[in-house]
Image (spheres, helix red, strand yellow):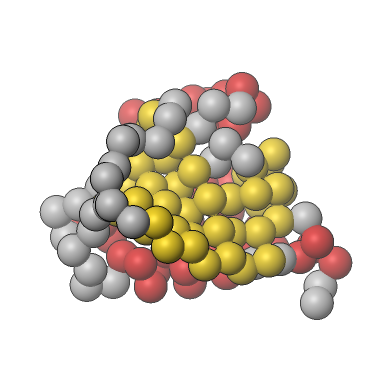
Length: 125
């Protein structure tokens, strides 16, 4: 396990018709490839919206923002959307400075969904 893996984790769960990806900790270029793989799997030929929950992320860099934009583009091509939940002031500021608040669908809480919740966790991405 690489040292950076001690700083972040991804938790995936289903909320109704959407999949929620929770990011916990610091996400930088080292975590971009595993996050990209996770989001590619979820956006490939699937009929679902994807929600990325950044409320537990303490840092995201440009590489992660690029991963989110790529997932958003794939979902839009399939008639769906990527929602990004962000409430931490630093994260919101980064998204705004990069003008991603005009590209991504940003919300400050998870949408209400009915249905079962199934979780899968990937420690250390």
